[in-house]
Image (cartoon, rainbow, N blue to C red; front, side, top):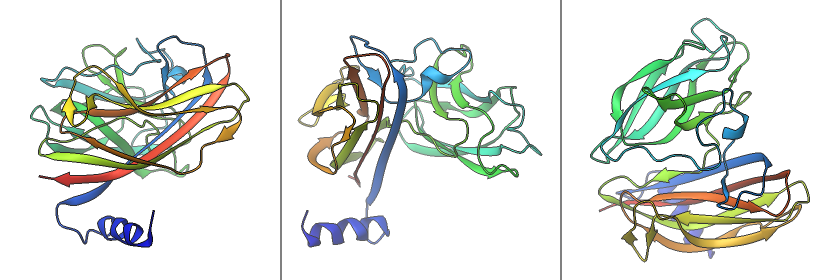
Length: 257
């Protein structure tokens, strides 16, 4: 990237460019298996009880669903040492960007007072002496706690789930991404979206770029991709042997049309 492009991104990040903002996704996964369909780079395989699907994060109903937030530790609650409140960034049934602060109640699920189409992010707002979550915190369907859509891993304060849905009335231009594998297990890591050439393909995650890694990192990889409104962007890995450990990140500019 040239300096003019870096300057443009800095101006977008600073809120100086009208109708544009930075969108970022980060992901991690440990103890990967050799799953034929690949494994989304999130730490859902560490949750207890295990979710209905920890290899592929389920996609909520497009009409929206009732969801709740819960921790695996009683210390993530008002007066606890862990997370006391979290902010949920989500899209409503129309696909518009919304946010809601939820007060945690430990291992008792707390309903989110909204109908949610997709959860884009979740992070801690207030915390006790520990400053991070005491247990895994997850966002799940209220009617079926096995359908987990987002999470903050124990000991963290923000989601490490690289999935994002582009809000209605916007498109996303992906500028760069990166990936790493840490345990010397050969792994193909692929950034994917439910779109091609700007056309939405609901439920079909097509590859945008790929990297084979074995105890190495890609470094900064430039990417030029346009993701349309209501498409989902995510990153998944295909390991050749059990025990791979991978992380990833991507960023782009969200443009309001």
